[in-house]
Length: 247
Ligand SMILES: Cc1cc2nc3c(=O)[nH]c(=O)nc-3n(C[C@H](O)[C@H](O)[C@H](O)COP(=O)(O)OP(=O)(O)OC[C@H]3O[C@@H](n4cnc5c(N)ncnc54)[C@H](O)[C@@H]3O)c2cc1C
Image (cartoon, rainbow, N blue to C red; front, side, top):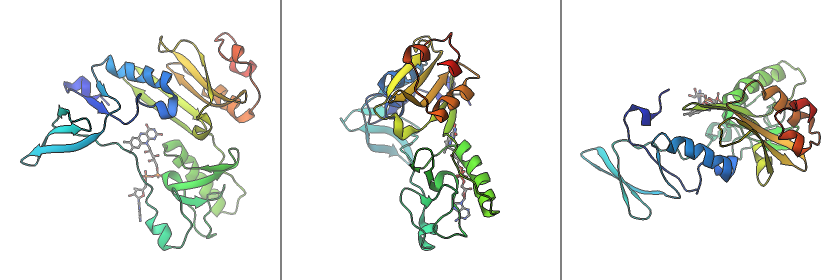
């Protein structure tokens, strides 16, 4: 997929936060992604909201921001999040709340009805809390878990949430429990500035999430650190010469 800005378009990003992705990655790593896009000519107006989209003859001409400035535009992409469609589940009398509530086997309160993928708000046995994940890996794994459960097998959906994205020449993979990264310590292996690094989120000295950026074949090691929940030494974690299974 070719980014819009590389097809001759002028691109401006509006968002309510100071730094893009800061809610997920924190300000330092969010800034790294912002710099990547800025270096390709993408402009950011942060924090900034669209107060009005104006047009002429059915065509958009500009966006008016909350501080009254105008941004010329002939195309507006609105990406402000999604709300799970739980209407059908509610009609069926199933409990809902940020998705369809299911247990660790993805079964609803009705033993004959299961929910998987984006719409399922499942109890995660490792996290010991509910988790609704909007990524294809979760949808693929959830379908298999639900099918096995329907066949009477004892099975739990306990995968560590995972996703990847490619942006310009940056490729990244992320595994971890997003809710646990809020306020967590971030330790990096390799330099963020170089564009090749791994970031780890630590709570109480244990890795709860990890993101590798332009560093490959480390996801198994990251997931093992998360799954084992063993205490790690941050000096060893940040040292690229020490294998992840020895930190
Ligand atoms: C623009 C975009 C980019 C994305 N990029 C990534 C990415 O890079 N990496 C990643 O991991 N994830 C990404 N995702 C998320 C990923 O696509 C979803 O997590 C995944 O598709 C969820 O699968 P699902 O089966 O739960 O839901 P969906 O793929 O949404 O499928 C739900 C299906 O149910 C059908 N349906 C709804 N109601 C009914 C009904 N009443 N009867 C019959 N059928 C019905 C819908 O028509 C649809 O076909 C992206 C999503 C979007 C929108």
